[in-house]
Length: 280
Length: 258
Image (cartoon, rainbow over all chains, first blue to last red; front, side, top):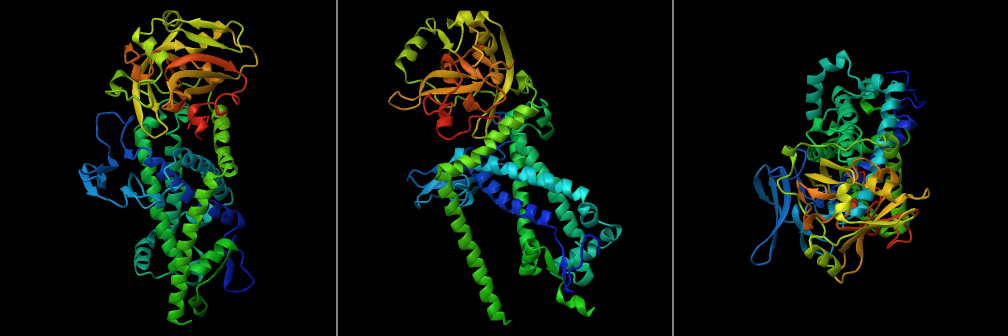
């Protein structure tokens, strides 16, 4: 147990998350879904992804969500990925609008913000919350380094690395640490949080910035490091879904390890150590 | 607590979350349609404009490419044949009678023929065109430096924006001509040109003949095609919808550097 984790008077409750961490956590919880959904609305304006500097290099798109109208006037949604075609009517390529009519549309209305196809407004949402995410994550990284939150809680120790096999097994069996062990993040948690904070979020921000013709001029050619502007759009898209993947696993873990306890610790800061611990 | 209770609590939770989600989405739609909320979100654009202007040196150059990078065909976007009899008459004569009018807050209002413009300092650049929709295309442009045109007419000290009045009407009935505006820093940027050539050929009508703006550090909708008249102003709030451009009047950001 580290010094920063002050013991709370009630023996089983301890102070897990500082106020700064809690505020930043919720700001990110607010901004990620807005960014994802407004991002999908923006994607719909040109529902294809390319690799390279431009969209007109002669090579076909890596991913395309399209709609096709049959002779009978029936619309089908088609997803083309690496040259393979799938009928995805109803979800991708063509889906029902808010009036219930089937229309050609990349991602469906319920996944986008706003629900109607409205590029100008989607960009407003996206570019406002991009600032919220960028500022919050910069603050978070600085705070973690300065307050030693990073070193004390996230950097895996020698012992962590040795326990990796056991931790993977425990996770698969949904066995969760109790007692003193529950006070520290395990090695998988550490790696997951580290990769979100230092890989996924920086990548999603950097690749978002790379799509800005203004930022490209800062150091002409820097975006070629990622393969060019259209590649950056593709990476931005993939990393966004990787963040959705992280969020899904994170939420699952939050639920199976005691939803209300976890929720309380992220609201009040206080976390109750799992019961069995007291008998150890 | 019995298992049954636990289950009910869980299903209630799931339903609660789904309901909350639907409500939130409906709410987001509502606030998107309100002016006050749209204004709050608009702060994002103002911050981006300030930060990019602060971060980017005045003469920071957009990336330039080689001939090999050029897109096989440069897409024509927006208007491809302006529905405007005056423009069509000019086009029929190969724009021999075309005059670019430059006026507003200037010491010497002038008009330039295409030959006059070709005699002024030019620049050739192979650049990437980024559409607000997300696609990019690479083309080679040659044109007169906007800075050179402006120096000829001598802007008054209080000028803040250049307005580009275009020949292409955006409504079927021939009304609502396209227009755009940029600030003076962009106007005097070395890569800001009024292009008369694309890919070593005279600029085609589909791409904005006889003159189109190239503003390489912003998105495509800023780069007005079919430019007929430049107006130097201190403020654009009295022009058309008052937001500084046709797409800006439809809700797009005035600063399109992102």
